[in-house]
Amino acid sequence: MGQIPVNLEAKNAYQRALELYAHAKSTYTENPAAAYYTLGRVAHLIADMATPAHVHLDVHISDETRFGDDSFEEYLEVQFRENGTNRSEFESDFPRSGMFHVDYNNLSDGGYAQESLLYRIFLSMANIAQEYDSDDANGRSDHGSRRGMSVSVSHGALDGVWILRSGYPDEILPEGYRLASSRGKFVLLNSTMETLGSADPPYEAIKLEFTDGSETHALSEFTNTDIGDHDAAELASALIPAAIEHTAALYQLFWAETHSSFSGILPVLVLNNGVHRLHIARPGPLEVNVGIDAGDWLDQPVEVYGWLEVSLADDTLKFYFDGRWLPFDDYNDMRHMLHSWRLVDIRDSTWRILDDTSSLPDIKFTINLCIDRDNNGLYTPDQSICDGIFVITENGLN
Image (cartoon, rainbow, N blue to C red; front, side, top):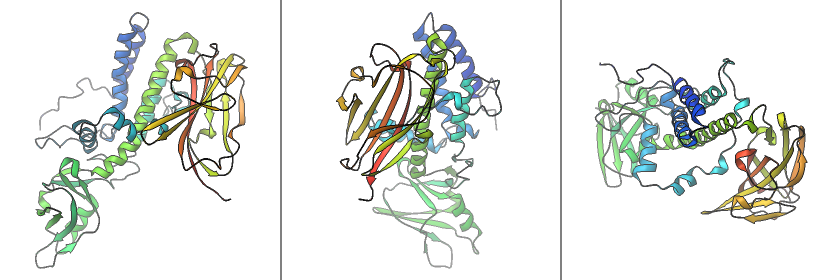
């Protein structure tokens, strides 16, 4: 096999990103647009770290079948590009209410304390992706449970799967397979292939019954490694939000390192002790624990903004707090919650958002809180430190 012409410089994603990041910082003052273009290339590398195949060093170059590279990337391509999915549909699959601030200062350095904060962002994203299987490598949590061997199929909805061997009646296979209908494939999990091959006598073929016909495939036809659509969707639900969160951390780090007002030790705001999902049993109150390390903003004048985002059907409703919850459309209409407040360190303070939740329906919403440098009541998110919680209300005891 010839040499694969990729990564000729023998640099990993972080090493390439570090060079690009340094170039973006050096050009920011004279040409911000060019700097952010370069930073976009760093963001691309972070997105690569959200693909299990990348962090497993699982080479995934297309073969003649077109679908011979990586199931996760193939699934996303079909789902969100070839099917014409627009931005609003993508955002409905990965709502902002499920994404939260990544504090790069508190991420693990993996034992490389001398490396930059950028390294921590890359390491954190890579560690998340390493938990999951790729086509040809086991994830640290999945342990190969999603991986299998595939065969191309030409029908649609699957009604049943039968396993065949000479001299024996056909047997139904109730589990141990996946369908990748978006890519025209049927996948037998590796554990199933081992079981079928080790039987005495071994099974020889698979019969697939569809609503519009049937197909029979010898086990020897299962030659491509794959994971099914359901598993790919589960990976996407975890890894795409994480990629967005870590990309946001990248841009926050870049802003902090190119703006003197964000130099030094920035405040850290933590809601609900860092647990970003909260179940509220009605009719009790809605309360959130607030912790603040003021850092270099200690005793500095700040404004604190609080708002809710509620997703209902295809609409998102927003409410800011100013003694009571008021609806708004434009973030520029945001009002500060506290006036002329000087920032201090806070431990285990309770923010009571609602005294009584009995009037709330079954609903999911996000609580957001930001600390902003005092700017005459103007909402300036690019100068704010924020955190959020995803809240689910449910019936409690009356």
